[in-house]
Amino acid sequence: MQKKIIIFIAVFLFFLNIICWREVFVLSENKLLKVDFLDVGQGDSVFIQTPENHQILIDGGPDSSLLRKLSVVMPFWDRTFDLVVLSHPESDHMQGLLEALQSYKADYILWSGVKKVNSPEYDKWISILDKQQKMGAKILIAQAGQEIKAGNVLIETLYPFESLEGKEMKKTSNDSCVVAKLIYGKDSFLFVGDISSVAEKELADSKENIKSEVLKVAHHGSKYSTSDLFLENVRPEVAVISVGAKNTYGHPTLEVLQRLEKSGIKMFRTDKDGDIMFVSDGNKIIKFQ
Ligand SMILES: [Zn+2]
Image 1 (cartoon, rainbow, N blue to C red):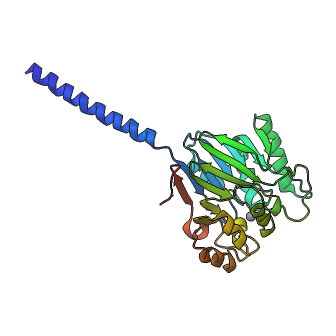
Image 2 (image 1 turned 135 degrees about the horizontal axis):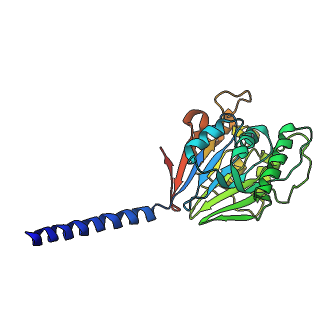
Image 3 (image 1 turned 30 degrees about the vertical axis):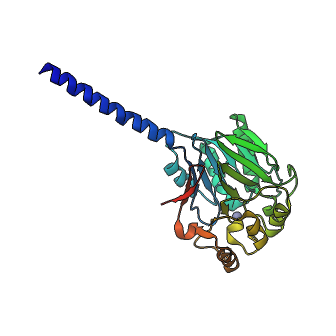
């Protein structure tokens, strides 16, 4: 009888062992990059989680809705971003960051360093940078050729070609936007902020490799961006438009929707689809439902 019990326990432990190893195997296989285009209304905000669990935030949208989104995508005890990117200091990209960086810390902050006068929002951004720096954040000024490594994920700065630090922006800072490419294995995502077709042409004519599987459409679908030339060079399979259901700009414009359709590019938009998450294993990108 005792022998039977011992055999039973041995068999039980043997199978438990197999189950445990299977779990370990499955977990270690689960090296996924998650790119979440947050529905923050008329603005941009993208939350990225790398396979090594680095957290990257690109832009913060126009208001405090980012804080609500962050409380879902980040655990409540985690108050640190590895990297925050501000594409350009305009309200619809910056306001949410101003709010989030009051209670969250960033290890690195990447931005263009442009100057804006008579803008209380901009002044607030500068004071937040100062505060974050005192808490240990490193401030990086964007310039093409720069590379940031987050484990196996690479963030390449493609634009501006030269540092714009201290340069004064008169009207709009759209063409001073930081353009960055996120690369994981064979997959890549292109973030272009609000650049116009002028900057798009400069990028298409440059030596920068702008080919990417997923394109964040520039300037919420404005007709002055997302030119045919740019699309021919990026050759994305998927395009994401970050846009508010109610906006007075007529975004996204019919012109851009038609250009994307004509090029056979699959399209998602935050005003219709809500938060849009993509998952990549480095070989293939799938849209997470
Ligand atoms: Zn914008």
